[in-house]
Length: 167
Image 1 (cartoon, rainbow, N blue to C red):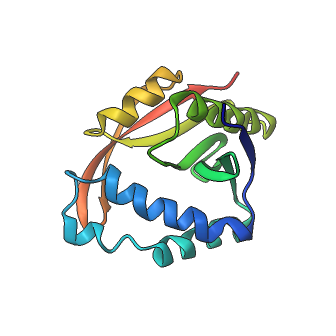
Image 2: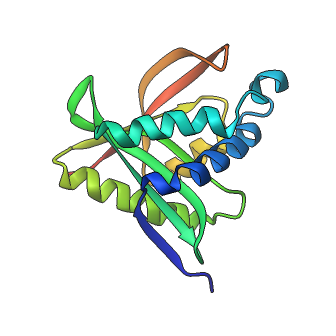
């Protein structure tokens, strides 16, 4: 059985996380976003964002490794619009990550948000992305009715906010 290790990300992890993100975006958003836009999802582009998040001190990044190989990560922190609430900014996983391993990483993230004093964790999901919605609903997140249109990758996409009550 593979050994799962969950730990905080460091600057040394950025290149590997950016490579995973590039692959993830091209796979996850296939069918939602045109292929020519998806091909702009490069590791260099994502590395800059991850580096900024990590260096800002506003965000935490937890990653999970299976037998020493990065399988998934979560970026989370305080919601700037609602400081008493936590916000999961980004979740990325490889194709070989099990649902149980994802649950363990999300549980650790929720534990850290609780320890930061948050009462609710929010995350935004594409309304048409049934696979991700199903995953987070099975992990205990519920839609709270908030919906938005956001320009992502040069296209207007519909997203819904989900919440998890931490206390």
